[in-house]
Length: 314
Image 1 (spheres, rainbow, N blue to C red):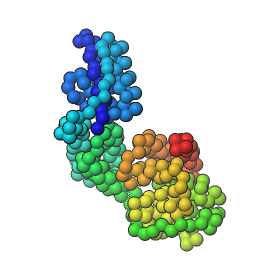
Image 2 (image 1 turned 135 degrees about the vertical axis):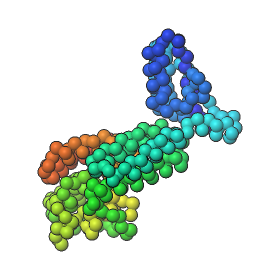
Image 3 (image 1 turned 90 degrees about the horizontal axis):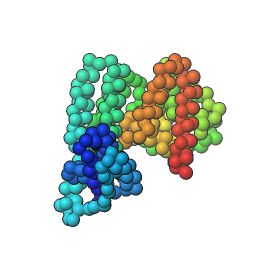
Image 4 (image 1 turned 90 degrees about the vertical axis):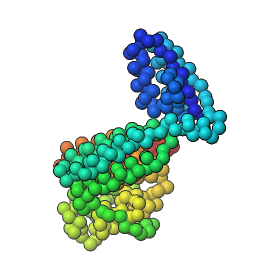
């Protein structure tokens, strides 16, 4: 294990500069070897960010130097790695998750969802600087997923339950010019799935919003509800089921979209941009009472996201 060590020295009177440097060190998730010596795992990104902190120290009238180091033996390597342990931070978040879960009966759904999102943001902040993730991160993520599922069931009792089955490969030509139906007031998975249908599966699709899944006619293609033609299968959310059904998993940008939708719909592995996209879609949903108008505006967001992902994967 190779580490970068930042040696910082600041004059006693440089209180403003000292605070700026300290905030930068804390936000990067540096481990403290001793006073004035801070560590990060060796990488190009770490080197660049530590260079910036060193420059801040010099700008404040002090000094900042970066060295590369590693442990002399396994015991010392383990001791260095232990300096990055985030278990206490995860424990605090886990306890707050338990408290929120215990208080759900006294909270309305919107308040519970807002409190959950605050916990998710805090978890993601810790996760971003957890360079050696272990059981504490996994357990906290599991608690978050369970809580998210409970709150989702309260807000949307018609949310589909995953069934265990193979996802057959279907021919796009057999699904053109069809009527596709899902539940009213769509949220992330339904919005993204409708976008995927219109952009990649059935450009002439007609989307119908159902007050109840029971209103879906026999010749309509239902999606994202129990008994629908396309819904959750195994670990896949509806968007991912559609990708698999129509052979769209060969497009890396769409797979990345699926990871985002999965994260926002049922939790799991965090996606860095998920919080921002969720806030944007929540604002759209609150401002557009008409589901057709909501979908049209959400499709613009997904188009922008796709372009961004395509540029990155290319």
